[in-house]
Length: 197
Image 1 (cartoon, rainbow, N blue to C red):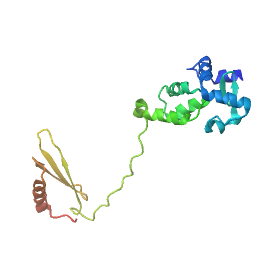
Image 2: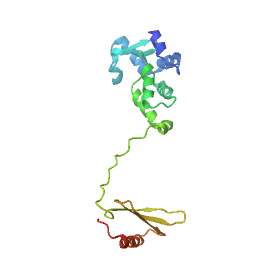
Image 3: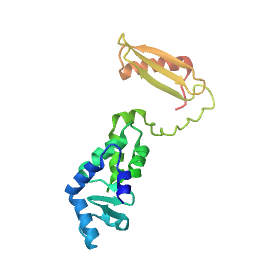
């Protein structure tokens, strides 16, 4: 059992440090007392669910071949597993090989989701699916209009695009009032005709 405990200790944390903190941890003391008495009522629900897997070696508690990390060392353990910013899956896999404690997976996910470096290199979420616009039957039936600006000279561009032919008209505007835009659209419609609305 001592060999298992020694092999299960993470490389970033010494077994002596884990033993020292385990001695002070009230939850692990409750586990040690429960193993002696068989009464698990003072332990948390997550511990009660795995009572058949729990043993102790000195002051260290084990779940199978994994060390149960005391509360004071849980953040340090997660940070050690997260070293190198490998992401949620790799961090949890590193933790699961050697240690265990209640809510370990949730804490690892929270750390990775709040880590700036991990966010920079992680894959972006899937974009919203693109819904195609139905192509009109002929030119100048459906139009798109947009404003661009202000440009460096304080002007704006009014752009009108035909969905069918991709033909576009551009007008420069110095202000973007509705009356000015209507006047530009009237000029464009006078040349090409009215679209179908």
